Length: 392
Image (cartoon, rainbow, N blue to C red; front, side, top):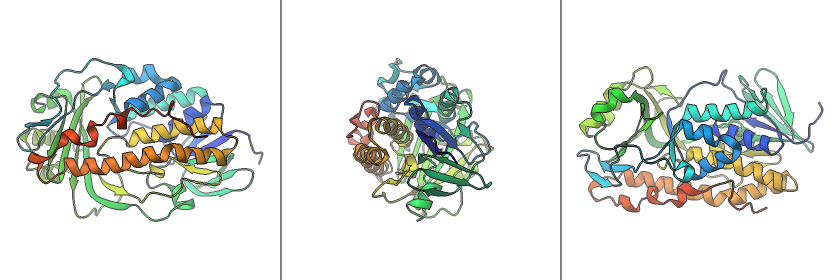
């Protein structure tokens, strides 16, 4: 097999994998993205796009499409779970003025994924290959080979594991310890705005803070769709899988002590699309690379979702990696520079996400100092990997 020059295999066609692919393409690399799902379609729900990650994606030429598909995040009102009394923040019924990527934005994950996918395919229509489940990785002095379940293989200079917190690449080369349950179950659904209207109160984005529970809802797609997420502490997670069908009654029972608006929204959850999943954590790795293989995103550093920065970290990884690979003399130097450039940022977000969860699930929300929570620190959301120091 002839070894091409400047070629990269990306395992996983999620947000991090596609961002890395697009950024690498723009720096002249030849990229193939291998995804185990048989097809790429509309999955997920709302996510936060931090100001810095939005600026980074705009640097890849995606700015106009992202601005059209997303909306600025209004002042988020943190309220008492039972009374809906304002604890901190501000009720904002109407959308705030659009200031582009100077502020964080809400977007449907599927919309962001589609924009990234279109950008990658515009550079190379054959760049993304579906239905390819990784079974093994081999590397030597001249390159790395990925083996797939159908007997096929692919070879390139480098391989990126962007295949999530249950990463096959991580399991094969770095750490085969399974993720550990974090004692939290999340529920998610989308509700049309016209149905949700009676339960929206005064704010467009509201977080209900309660003992061992947090309930978050905000608008998507020009205000026509409400994203609903509830996270509850629990002792055990008996199910397998990440997106498991949940029952409305189960969701409602988990939040039965919450304000009537919360219960009203939960009862509107479409049974066919109400999903639950367990939150899992992994201990930090000492290094994210081995030879010609590098982990990025959740494969390298999964975090809890309480700051909404998981997608941002994956996007940041992809943009920063393309920069260091183009600036460094070889992949060893580049991977070391990538780790140095990203470690402090990743660890800050990981630790602050844990702290944010502890604060917003406090046993006594009446005396919780939310004004001092990590969510009130702009520096966490303004980090821009397209301009951050490289350390090469």
